[in-house]
Length: 133
Image (cartoon, rainbow, N blue to C red; front, top):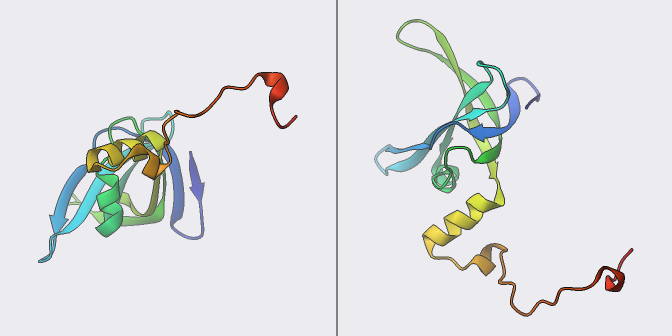
């Protein structure tokens, strides 16, 4: 799905079609992450996405087929063959909670710290004892 904003602002909802490509740029080796999102059923329903700096660091844990919501600005450039190409300069990338959990595990952060507390200490209630209707 794609939602048009003002001018070239867009919001895409879809899935990655491949693992992201991670690189660095500049003297300080800033992070850059590129990936492609399929947002529809048609052949042309894909958009290349580029992220930089801290957002790029957070997108490194994305994997092929991960569902994402991407917000940014469309940018175009002309390739060597003279063909105009478009990509989304992302300002926000929101992923499924499993991606957040996987990133936490890979960073050595406990699951409770990212909103996945252990199930110990909880008691299952019968439907008639629930505190709401």
